[in-house]
Length: 571
Image (cartoon, rainbow, N blue to C red; front, side):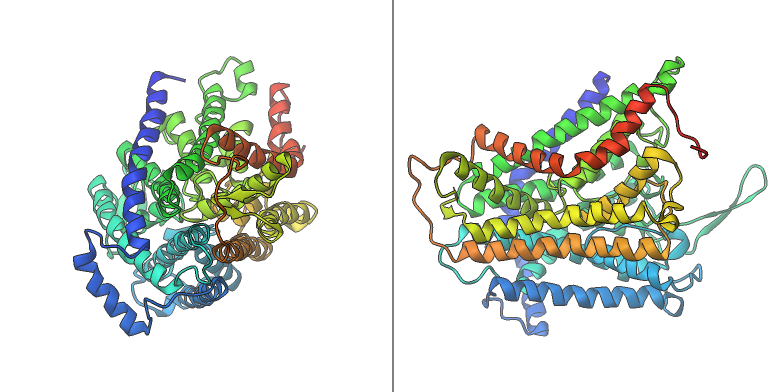
């Protein structure tokens, strides 16, 4: 590990931390209905939208009504996106005359973008029209990201309010998030990416003749606008099949750094929003500290493993780190750091091929997702996922000292703990259950590119990525089959909405409770002890659940490589 590598990691962390308070303060003003510096321009637009949609911005919803509104909204979004994908050959802005997407692939893609997963079993530039990219995918990138944020805000209100029956209005929160947060940030980001060299055009693909005389088609399109929200909203779906490894989607080292920063920016800032809205910013910093500890540990292991390289090649005297599947522009540190960020934040964008990472280097992104992607996590989703673990941690702490657990003055009782466990357990059900079925079906096993433990890891990674709503992949799995399209779509839908519903039930239950004054027996939740306990609970739950599957995948692959054993197609 070089000094340059350490500096990249340190500068990245400092920039993200510097953004936490200003973004957190701004978003707090937005979601509490206070005036912001954009209000003179956007407030009239906001009022017009409410009038057109028949929304009373002063009317708030019970947690169940809030959740039902969100689900109905997403059913409509799913149907709209499916229709666009199936009918794109009949719609405008299709200069390459792309045909309709197959039924099963359109179903998978619609589930993917509605759930903020952005898993892609297709090559964007060779499959989708410009209208599908803009009206279909980019449109859902905004709305799925906004949904995650507003659900986190609703859960925060549950902790902050006393004896309340409502947790806000889904329609008002969604409008404000899109209008005041996502759009104002995406516009300058889009211009920045255009400046860096990212295309933004409706012109058809370019055709060039190479030095050897061959004809080459160079795909372009409205890339920069999709790139801005895919990173800021932790969506991750790329305009190009190569995603952020493509020179038109990530042209420079500066664009690579900005993409990494924007992946974490809103998710990290939401911890500050939490602290401000509950009246104690130390609570938000404690949660961010727990996220930071796990993030830095993952970065350390991944960078070390990739810098060390393959033990088989090292034994042959071919040292120098693992550059397979990586861009020379970004190097080992830039690629490994990006991989940890994108899987910690439920983004799924990639600037290197995770399938080509070392066994341990590829295992850390997998663990990030298996923990529920709560290490910053998807915008909003990371915070409400972490708060679910906070409920479990407080319950464990209460058992240790023999008193009713409390958090922020709210008693954590059986209902909250049951809902938290439902939210936590639905993820391993889809991750491990989907993997278990796939590895015994010959047709599913036929899709893997590698035999042995790495092939198992390719399947495990796919179902982990789907259920955790990440969207990145071990590229060795050919997932565009009817079986994988349907089962991965099921994993995405369960992983998104079967976590949201229990989390919203917790929000409603807590909002209705009175606060209990702190006493000498109250467990402090803003110090190092709480941070350590929270991290410990998360790792124990993840370790007990996923260690057996990791043991037969990346761990045994690493041990076999250290012993000089490799796997061929005949193994």
